[in-house]
Figure 1 (tube, one colour):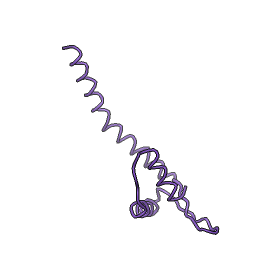
Figure 2 (cartoon, rainbow, N blue to C red):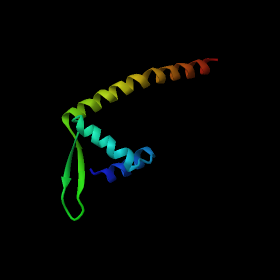
Figure 3 (cartoon, rainbow, N blue to C red):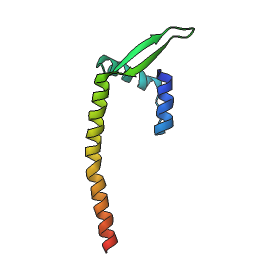
Figure 4 (spheres, one colour):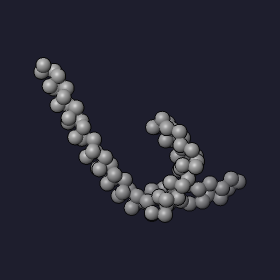
Length: 88
C-alpha cells in the first residue's frame, strides 16, 4: 500500500485526517526500525509501497496485547458499576 492509500484508509476506518507531513516521517521511522519495508514502484509516476515485516507483525501483536491489558480493567470496572446501579 502506498502513502496516499494509507491516508485514505486511516480516514475511512478511524475518521481521522492524516496529513503527508505527519504520515511520511512516521513511515520513515518505522522503516528505519525495520517494522515496515518500502519498495519503489517505477512507472510514469513513481510511488513507494509499504508492507509490514515479520518484526513489525511481532511489534503489532505486542502493542495490541498491551492495549487490551489497559482497556480490560476499564471494561470490568464499567461492568461492575452498571451491575451496582442495576441492584439499587
